[in-house]
Length: 259
Image 1 (cartoon, rainbow, N blue to C red):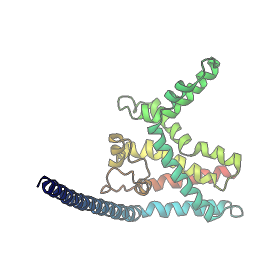
Image 2: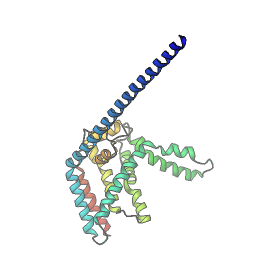
Image 3: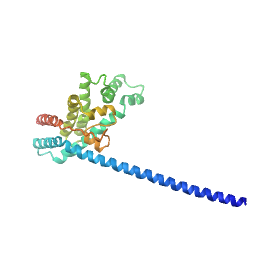
């Protein structure tokens, strides 16, 4: 009799375990399907935002093509539209990544952690100044109590030019890479003037949101959509006003490249 009860209990336990496993599998499948559904919805939102961004900023992109044309005409024998396009995509991605890195790496702390104790004081001073320059954007620029001081605006402008393309010009010149340095300079000065002139005057919500959450809205808007770092996919930036910056900077570059 006892054996019968034990066998019956074992049987009931097995039935309960099977039932529980089935329920768990159903719950897991339910969560998986919800996750896939949410992912698909988010992808659709990104695609919609991408189309809206291109449509809203068509004058910016048409002006950019005009700048490509001016660069081509100023040096027709050694310039191709392919290299201009590749150069723009290259610097757009690099500029975006550079901005992200500046918010996630503290170069001064890293240097102080790994530097040798017997380093020459003068060299140490130069390297510390360089690290502070790299950290300027994430520390000083995002400190609203001091970031509007004229000296800090100027320093931020210089920082933008260097980190958003100036350093790349040196790299391109050294290795003779398949990159048109005029596009790199166009991007660098477009970014710096937009950041320190246009945004100061217009105060767009996308820039405000970057200061709310500095892991989003690194710029430009289309890059944030492509890399899924946009603060609010329903708030698409209209930056056609940057077309003026593009034209002026391109004319200056074309003029000086003749000499």
